[in-house]
Length: 235
Image (tube, rainbow, N blue to C red; front, side, top):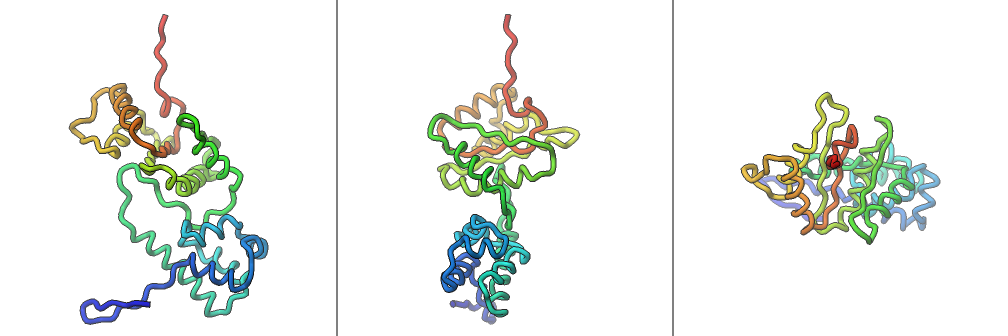
């Protein structure tokens, strides 16, 4: 493992990445993904996400049962927990998200396999521009689910993901006029070039998105009016 010199000191080597380390221990033990999952209570999908680097900073309460299921020594367990801790530090040290960037997924997200699979099928449907809706009362983890699914799917979209928190539980939720402004800024429209009227912003947004392949997440909508264009009443 390489080190480098900085201001006359030898830096400490970086802890190993969690994914390759976990996979190596599982292969050494001759186990499938399902076997440590059954023993530890951590889903096979979650273990697979760790091994592939999609979840690189799970909490110790997730990693330690895996170490037991893999029959690791104390030293190997400490190394595995340390790799997860280093992964969390790297995530926290990452640059602040840009406009409309997808927020970090919950590091040790588990469960919701059925819902995640449904989102994957519906969002990547081959025909048209599919729209998927996740609804329910506040609190059960809708945002965590959607962000988790989006983080898995974003690689399929050439232009990435646009995320807007509509703050539906606030006294003054984000309405379409401002939501469109945030999306247009993220798409490269300068502040001085933002249309003044909501309808004009909507037209510009649609025109720009026709040229792109992106996943758009509108989170925490208070009501339908926040995400749907108003219908004109005509006689």
